[in-house]
Image (cartoon, rainbow, N blue to C red; front, side, top):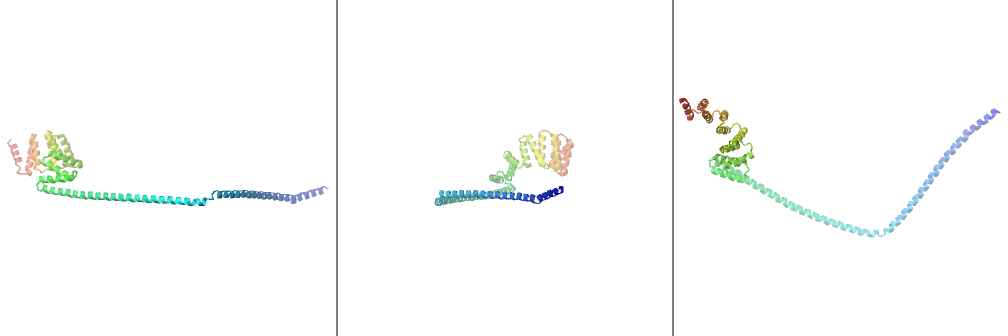
Amino acid sequence: MQRTDLIIYFWLFLTAAIVIIPCGYLLYVLWNKSSDFIERKAQVFKENKELKTIKNDLEEQKEEFIATNEYWTFIAPDDSEKKWEEEAEVKEENVDTESSILSVKENTDEKLAELIEDAEKREQAQEREKKKFDSLLLEAELFKNEWKFEAYEKKLIEAMAIDDESLKVLKPLSDLYFTLGNYKKALSLLKKVTEKDPTDHKAIWQIAEIYFVAWDTQTAELLIEKAINLKNDNPKYYLTMVEIYYNTERYDEALAFMEKIIKLRPTNPKYLLATAELYEQIWDIDNAKKYYFTVLEYEQNNEKAKAKLREFTRE
């Protein structure tokens, strides 16, 4: 009895496992799919309804738009005509602008041509003046070589009237006045020369000589030092310094500069004689004799050296 019951229970369980559970799962799947289908249909229906509503609204707006713009085709020509008039005005303005530009360009070209012509005339005039200036300097040099100093001065003054800033005329004219002893005219020109050429040692020395003649020994001494620094082998500059020292009673310094001159020109009888005389004036007879003898070595017929040596022998 018990065994029979167990078989029955087992059979029921097996039936449930094979039939009832699969059928239940199948029904569950079918229910889910049918629910999804119904929802999609409902969504499509809803969307169709909304589209229909939108379509009706668009139709109504179209009819209203057409009703409110029934005269539009008659207005368009008026706008086109206005646009054409505006374009015509713009074209007219462009024509006026182009005319103005052409007029300005013509005026500019005329002024430019005038400026070019004026520049060419000035250049030609300057070229003529330059040729005349060079010609005057050449004539002046010829008169100088012929010792015609009045004509030489005249030509230099004519050249200076053309160009009073050129060193080509300032230097020779100032040198002429200095040589002639016209220190007033020479000084103004010499200062102009040194302004334009601060390295012109000759002009500096000439200015120093003028100050020395005017007894401004302090200024003269400073200028001579400057000239010597620029040109240290010109005995004239040292000789002027000797004169300054001698006249201010600085004899030792004067003799030191005379010795420098002798080193520069050891065979020049003039400088040897001047050194001998300077030693004699400060009563240094031995050195005076030495230089007088040296003078005779280079100039045997120098009467002054011979006379001085005879005088020293008698004493």
